[in-house]
View 1: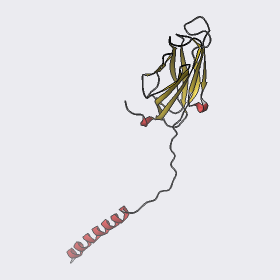
View 2: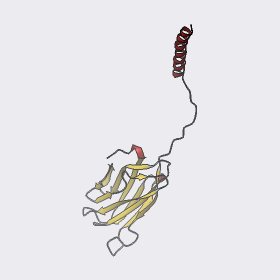
View 3: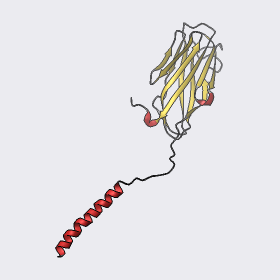
View 4: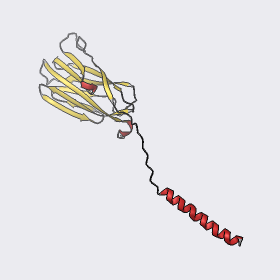
Length: 188
């Protein structure tokens, strides 16, 4: 008789456990809460031209360079005035990761305006050169380099007035970089 009761109880206990497991497995659970995500943001914090008086490589002060940060710190602009063929200048801008997530520079938009019109190019890696009959612009920094929150990095651009330029001309270069979250940067 004990055997029959034992044989009857074991399957009943097993079926009860299976039923309870299935009931718990198929229940809907609702969670209510707030999720805080990070911020992806960088700002240009300073700009600099290498021509601060006497033209680089020369003994006279003919051409000039003015640098300014765009509205909101999203771009840097460099204006060259009274230029001449072979005028060569390095411009630098520093940018800071003001977000909470590491970022990488994904692409850069270079826009050059001058007597020959306006030309733009989007670079998604190096080399990044914008060449017109009047001007050569060479961007050479920080593609794919991780910039941690609170860190400031320097970027440089070389501008060279070519022989096709008209003496005394003015040019404006705008540099705008787009940063992405560090893990969204495409692998090379």
